[in-house]
Length: 75
Image 1 (spheres, one colour):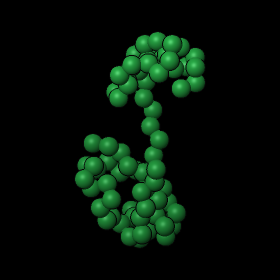
Image 2: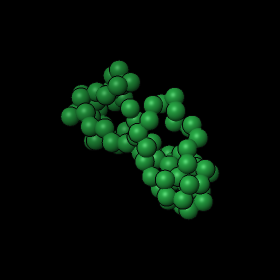
Image 3: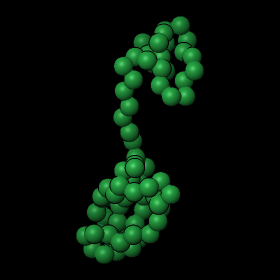
Image 4: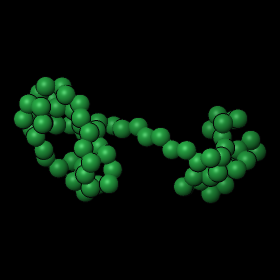
């Protein structure tokens, strides 16, 4: 299950919740103040491929991207 990041619009507390994707935007109350004006944050994630192509990359974009590693060309 994914971890989602939220912020309470009442007390400005940021927190994370593990919940199913189909419940990502389901209503909830802030554990800190009990407020119900909760907004989901845009989250960043980290993925490492060990120099191999990652999901969604069928072939390199240029000659410098051999093996799916775009570190040399800036893709």
